[in-house]
Image (cartoon, rainbow, N blue to C red; front, side, top):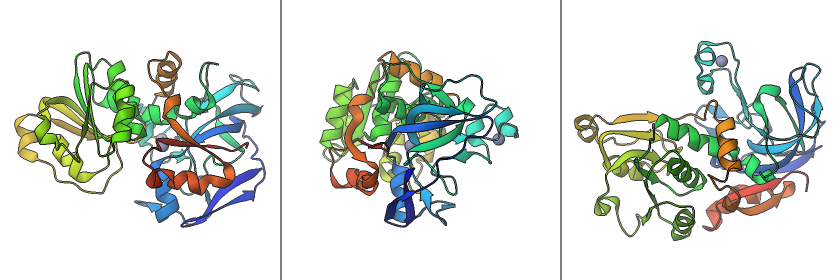
Length: 337
Ligand SMILES: [Zn+2]
Ligand SMILES: [Zn+2]
């Protein structure tokens, strides 16, 4: 099979690799579509994210959909030919975190495109049967791949305990911010204000049903005078994050979703005197069925976020597209083309 392999920083080449063999509890999937993610770009440009360092050639890509083409010997609950969305992290299922239902915090999780585990920018992957989810016909291949970033949004909204009538502030109108904003509406938020520094992204957000967009380059958040019950921080920008925390009101919740720097200034007296809860999210757990249902019912729109399409040979372009062009929301790679 063909596989797009990161050899070293800013060096990706298509190679021939053997088609992987599914283990007894795995399925073999022919990959249809793979979204590109900020983390893929980070590995491509810097060769590491925190303690995860690319030491050997690595296949990137973790937002994937495909079709099952073979079953491991023990697989009973899947069929060859079924279209599926892939949950790209397989935890150990036996440690304390896994048994507590927090399998996203499993220290032994094997996650696609996180060194040394290969991802999905290739023609075929194998995956544990429990992390492969059939999708209905109304979901496109792209939408089925974007169940992964939608899962990030669903998990963030659950952590934020968004309930009917909530006022929500979303910082950053990238793919995760746009999905978080839509998901917040579905969870019952009646006001969703989204910020960014790019008018194009904010226009997209407006089309997807947020109630107000703010370009913080021209109108800083303090001037907006908005008090939120929930902040979903999706910008990854420490300055924007600090400012946004000040917009959260009494007994509010702050969830850090974006991947930012290691540290930021927390306005502590604001947090203390209002008893604001502050937490982060790391990936997701038990979100695929919800995310698939939200996408299939049309409650969350995924297809219009796919703005640019690339074949396997053009993965480097796909990974750098967003930095070159602010009309890029989600570039998708098609390994079969
Ligand atoms: Zn991702
Ligand atoms: Zn575990």
